[in-house]
Every structure is written in C-alpha cells, then in structure tokens.
Image (cartoon, rainbow, N blue to C red; front, side, top):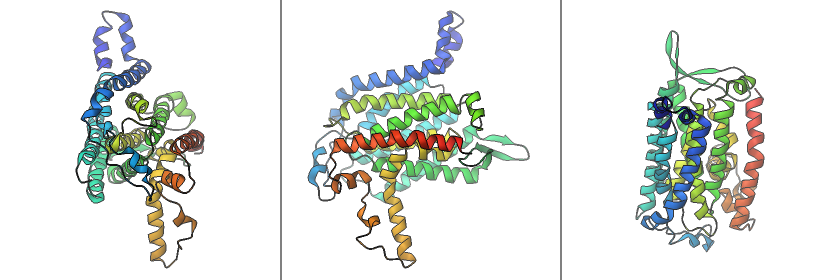
Length: 368
C-alpha cells in the first residue's frame, strides 16, 4: 500500500519516494511485524487453546508442553498481515495466493482447537486443496504468453542450462506436490521448542536474499544464467515480514517456552517457504533453502515409501537394520536414541542448516 501511496505523496515532498524503495519496505515490514508480535502476543495467548501434550516414543518428556497455549501461529500470522498489506506491493494473483496461505493456517488452527484432533486423511486432503489453489494462482499471476500456444511458466532447474516453458498441466501438479510436502515436513519438524520456527526463519531470510539479490537483480541473474523475475523483490518483502513476525514469537518460544505455534504456525511457515521458492523460478530450490527441515520432518515419508517398496519386491529389511532403527521426525531419534537434550537438538540442527544451506544453494545456482 505504501508503495502506491508514495506515487502521490512524492509530488508534495521528495523523501516520500523512499516508500517505493524495496529495501526500505523490506526493512520496515520486518521490524514492524517483529515489534508488533513481541508486544501483542503476550496479551493474546490466553485466548488460545491449551496443548494436551503427548508421550513421544515412550518418553514422557513430550508431556512438558501440556497446558501451554498453542496455536500461536494464528495470532502471529494475523498480526503480520497488516504489515504485509502495508509494506508489500503485491498484485491480484499474489494476494490470492496469500489468502490461500492463510487458509492453510486457519485449517491448522482449527485442528489445534479441536477436542479430537483431525484425522490424517482430512488434513492431507485440505492441504492438497490449498496447495493446488496456490499453484494455480502462482501460474495465473506469473505465466508468460507463448506465441502459438497457451501461456507457460518460465522455469529454470539446477544442473541444466537454459530455461523451460512449463505448461499449466505440468506446472500445477508438480508445484502443488512441492507445496504439500514442504508444508507437512515443516509441520512434522515442530516438536522441540524453537526448532521448526528457527529453521524456517533462517530459510526465509535466505529466500529473501535469493529473491532480492539473485533472481530480482539483473546483473546477478545474468551471471548465474537464470531469468530475471521483476516481482521477486516484492515477495522478498513478504517473506522477511513474516520472518520478522515469527522472530517476535520465537522470543517467547525459547526453551522453556511460554507459548507454542501449533499446526497453525508450522503449516503457514512451511507453505510460505514453498510458495516463495516457486517465485524464484526454480521449484527445487526449496531443497537447498530448507534441507534440515525437509530431512527432519519429511524423512519419515521417504522411509515409509522405501519399506513398502522393499516389501512389494520381496526384500526383507529386518528390524535391526539401520533404516528401521532411525526414527522420524529425526529430532525424536536424536532425543531418544542419541540422548540429546532439546537445547542440543536445536543448536545442532541450526548449525547444520547454516552449514549445509549455503553450500547447496551455490551448487544449485552455479552448477548448470
């Protein structure tokens, strides 16, 4: 909103043109959302449902969360919304995608509030609907016209030079699958105070860098032989505003936490990371930006698929095999099998993210 208001105001006073600077808007959105959550959240969390706790792998340590306010992602994302509207100059289809992100958050919040938790099938189907909707909105908002054919999404991929023109019937299902998997992997990573939030905020900060400095800045994009996306800087403002909001939440989620973000927060963060990754033009870049989140939360799905395929083809993977001994989410394995404390899990996973993420990112950008 400020971006468009500045078009009028700068005629009266020159410095108002700063409101059309993406750097100014990015910084303003980040700090405004962080401060708003920091001051408002303690006044709101008493209205949240209470966590019921759960015994994890026979370890009653999981019951320590019982009684704490949960579903704080609902308030954090709502508090961030005015800052997004104020600082991020999004267009129509991007706003539709943002509304779908909030629908994913709302479904998670309703699950947090439910007396009986929703079944996996119900949650999976709702996640699929939201994922397809976002994929459609991204395509409608960013597909380019192609002479003699229907519009296509300009896409670039790691390890392959050039660009690809992807039609809707390939782009939408592929993008929806990435959105669905990233959202659920992030949700599964939410089991240690500060873990999913911290890892995702780090991913969002790097995403903002990629959107603004790499794909949104012509000289750098040309250096890496990737297409320039004019709207990328605007999504950098969105992701940093949300990162600021959840940084304000993490102030209270540091162990021992006072409040939990619940499915409302983890689903919102996960699908935002995937959506913003689509805005880079390379849907697979999410693998480099959130590697620890995807391995930690999504590894269980890979294990399940591997075991079922092995059984189908007659291979016996015994109970003593390393595949069966590794538990997922991986943070549960570290706590139960390796005897790591919550603080050790958080610190070591963050260090792994900070070490692996830039290396993978450089490989995906440069090796083409």
